[in-house]
Length: 91
Ligand SMILES: [Zn+2]
Image (cartoon, rainbow, N blue to C red; front, top):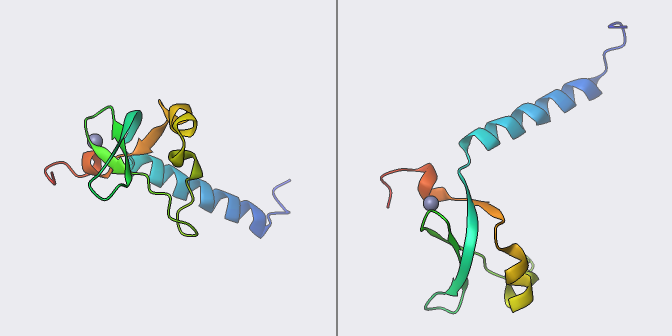
């Protein structure tokens, strides 16, 4: 059974370990609301009190949902990585 070890298995194992690593580093915070900054960009307010930009800036960042009230409402409770919580003492 172990005789047919393909590169496929190795690729799978590698991507899994990368995912694990990312999950371990990320601090996930739920979105509790949205507000606009001074430049009229949308900022998600997270449960930890931090804000995170959720720009709709195609083609780089496509978040068409953020432009509608319905779309924003549908994202409440979704978790984002909070960079500020990942780096305590940085603000
Ligand atoms: Zn935070």
